[in-house]
Length: 212
Image (cartoon, rainbow, N blue to C red; front, side, top):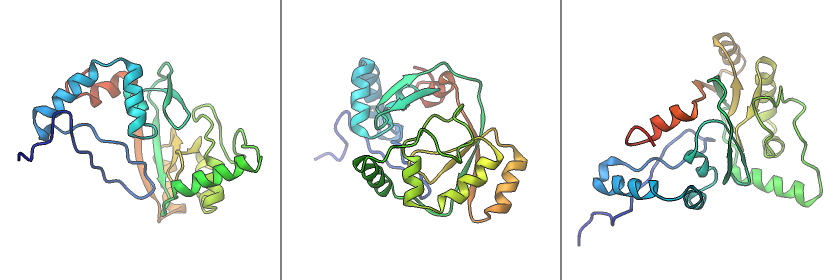
């Protein structure tokens, strides 16, 4: 029998630092015409059907059908695109430890089950103007109290927020001086500079054919 995967099949693999969320990779061209054919057929589906398929692959995956700025609710499957703001410089602060997503969601369920209200924002949040509310943030701090030190350091220097269930912390508009200060305060942490992408820029980079 042939070892070639059936039409529509492709393998996904990814590797990332501890504490990062692994998003599915794009279909690989290495498997031949199969991946391109799959992309062609998927691209012809209505957005609602695509969203349902994406939600079945994993939490937050539907966002990657849109890109750009959006409000995301539920477990990441409800995406409401927003008009893009100008691109913003970001700094990722990665503490030297992972935070268990399973433990964070367990803490969230305990809070909801006990009737403990979820805060609208954390006292150490710098602002909610760029970062929307993150219901998991308080559960992250409960699960791993060591996160508070890193979040406080970031929030003193720039508008900051916990990414999802942690442990990555995102700083908005951080410059080289802020990066240097964090490196001195937390020499065991990793710092990665990046920036937001407009929806058009995201689609151009994400598409196999160079555009959707």
